[in-house]
Structure formats: structure tokens, C-alpha cells
Image (cartoon, rainbow, N blue to C red):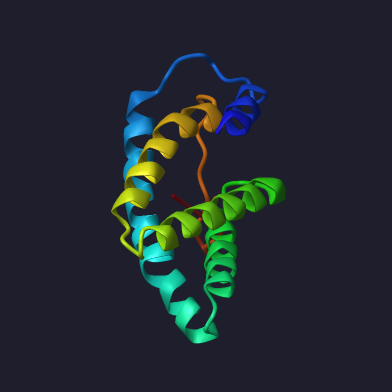
Length: 134
């Protein structure tokens, strides 16, 4: 988390903690844990008969899904996903502790990474000027 905060500081962090963004992003982690560690990780672990391969594939997908970051950011997210897979496995595939740690991770890290700047993903849509932003 310290590395992420330092990276955010280098992106002109305004020093103003954004409560709304922090709270919103902490809830995003709940859904991510349900999908990537609660469903995909055990499913891939069963398919490959290997917790390691299940963790690797689900974490790679987790990293790739974070399109708002560049290559190094996606790699970092994927590695973080591996850590959460370890936590999930260590807790006998009970996602509650993962949801708790992911929510707090996002609560403190997101304002530092975004640094007060608006970020969005733009999907190019034919006939729609500027595409669809979300």
C-alpha cells in the first residue's frame, strides 16, 4: 500500500482526502472479491486441479480488468490479486476477510492513486461523439 500511495503522490496528489471517492471505491472491492476470489479462483482451481494455477489465472484476469491503469499498474493489481487469493485460500475460501481487507485497501489507496483527478474509461461507440464514458 505504501508503494501505491507513493505512486499516487507522484501523480500530483492534492493532499485533500476525497471521502466520497474513498467510500465508493471501498464498495467496489466487495464485488471484486465476490467475483474474482469467491467465484473465479475456486472455479479455476477446480478446473486446473491446482490452487496456484487458479490463483494465477483469476489474478491475471483481475489485473487485466483494471483498464484505468497502465501496464505496470495492471501488473501491480494482478500481484495484489495473488495476495488476496492466498488470503482466500488461507481462510478456506471464506470471502469475508478478503472483502474487509480489500474494502479498506481501496478506501485508503484510491484517493492517493487518483490524486484528485477524474478518471474514466471511454468506450468508443459509432455515432456517439466522444464515446461512452463510465
